[in-house]
Structure formats: structure tokens, C-alpha cells
Length: 453
Image (cartoon, rainbow, N blue to C red):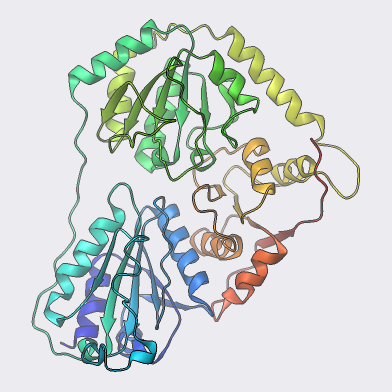
């Protein structure tokens, strides 16, 4: 079997449905192998668009999205998405022989990717593909790059495919869960924070049950929106800023914060102080400690498992004074409604967000680019379901809105999708549509508003 055929067969074994690609001389063997495979090739006109679409596929499905480029990169270095990038490169034996375009292609992506590997022997393809997908999908998920040089793609290979298998994360021990429950029950004004790491299907289901059974007041980060339905009297807002917003009134009053799915890739939702609240960190991985985040207790392991076991220990007996939080919830809701019907022109962002929310269903999807308007959507847009508002609170790369919306429309043809874009963002990759035609249903919203306090 030719190495490129083995490479595509390994991708099929991983369950790859789409590959987003820019064709070129260096990946012709891979493209020919894809032609007779079960994988659908989506041709874009720029690697950036391919990377965004693959990253959105990963975010919405929980599986690694795949993009393929010719000379260059299509990887999106974002620790919140699952993405495996493959690149076509000149023959391996030409390395250092054509120095006018010779760069250290294997090391440049290292700071941006979880792993970057050049395939130097066709028989290593099965193990490298399996390892690449394992790393891309393992918490915290992120980008992985595999380089397949032209001469290696043409090799004959004999190695069999390594099939994937189910994995489960370990669950936190009884002792630490008992201690977490003890501290929560002893607190007078506890809060629940839902971050990017909790935006997983099993974790979302567990958290919805947990909040319903305990009555835990909660707020979320920009990338935790929709994990728990925000149309709840227990919802206190989204931490679109690190301080000084309405939700920080609740944070300042709290004596304990249970932070589920904290991810340092996001803008900090609040700043810890040495004599401030007790923070319990619940996540797949240990906390990355810095000057503004140093939790006093860590519950490490599968989030869904930890939340379910913690809920049983609390048994609906949350000893929390909700009076202040209830009043604050009403005040925030009133503040959001204040300018939702403002008739000034240019339109104020609060009116735009309110109008968008009024026409979008529970399961409809809003995809955002970067810009100050993203803060307004994070603060004012009520998300009912996970994956219904796609915004990037990590590197916040400009140009994601349209390709993300296209990917969402491809995966959910029965749902309406709105892409909010800036003029400059559209200039970045307005050509992304490429040769793939999506069904009507994407609306692009262009900025024309004024900002008010």
C-alpha cells in the first residue's frame, strides 16, 4: 500500500468525516488517496479558513477536526479545540538542498501545537496518526501537526492500521470530594463558575443536574456560555471582563467559588486576592498557578464524574444565602433590558444583541469574530444550549466568524446560523467559501452601531 493511502486509511479509522484543504503540488498524493476514500474533501481558498473550519468541527463534535495544507500551516493554536493538521512538504531528501525556501518547518510550530512531527518513514504512519489524534483530543485539547513529505507519501508500506479505543479519565478520590463538600456546606455565599473546560457533553449534562438539584448560583466565562441554561434565576451573568462588571458584585460578596473547567487560555474571569475567597478547582488537570489564580483545593479528574459525586454528597443541602444573588440577578436582567428597544441610529450594541436573541431559537447558532462587540454578546446574549454561541476568548483570532458559521451550518442543516463579522475580519478570509456550497441559512451581520456606556 502506498504511504498516502495508508495515511488516509488511518484517518478513516479515526472516524474522520471531513478534511478542509488547500490543494497544492506537495499534497497531490494525499489528495489522490482521498479521492477514493469515504472522507469528504472541502476545498477552501486559504489555509486560515481551513483551520477555522476544522477547529469549529472539533468544538461542536468533540472529535478532532482535520485540515490539510500545502507548504505552510493551517493549524489553529487554540487549547479549546480539537484539531489535527496535516501538511504536504517537499521531498525529505531535499532538506537543506534548496536553501532559498528552507526553514526549520519541524520546530517553528512547537510553541503553538501540542505536538509537531515530520513523518520520515511510511511505516510509522499508523502510530503517528493514532498518537496525533490522542494528543489532539486529550484534555486540554489542542492542535497537532503531522508533516508528510512528498517522497514519503510515495513509499510502499506494510504496517497495519492501529485502531482507536475508548478511554475514560480517572475520577477524583473520596477524600478530596468529602473535603470539597465540607467546605461548600460551611460557606455562606458560595458561587459556581463554569469555564471553557466544562464545555463538554458529559460535563454539561452533569452540571445541569447539579445546578437543578442544589440550587447553586452560577456564572460563566465567555467560552462556558450555554453549558448550563442561562435562562435561569440562578444565573448571575458572564464574566466578559476580569473586574468591574455587574457579575463581579456577586464575586466580591462570595466567600467560596467552585471553579469548574478553568482554562488559563481565557481572559481571567476574576482576580484572586491573598485574603479573598476560597476557590475550589475542579478540572481534568491540575491548576496552573499564577499571581491571580491559586486555588486552595483541587479536585482533579473527570469533570462529569466529580460533579455527580459531589452532588450526591451535598444532597441538595446547599447552605447558601441567596438573597443578595437573587436581588443582583433581577438588577442585571433589568440593566440588560434597559436599551434592548433603544431606537437610536446608528443602533446601539445592546439593541442589536437583543434583536438577534429575539429571532434565534434555543438551538440556533451565533458565530462571532473578534472585536468589542464580542463583549456585548457575551454579557447580553442568553445562551440556552452548549455550542450555540461560538466566540473565542483565547487568542481571539480575527476572521473566525464566517468559516465557523459555515462549519456549523454543515453540521446542523436544520438550524439557523448567524455570522457576526467585522469588515477587517472579512478581508482576512472573505474568500474562505471556496468550492463548498452550504445550504441557505447563514446570515452575516455587519457592524454599524455606536457604543454607549
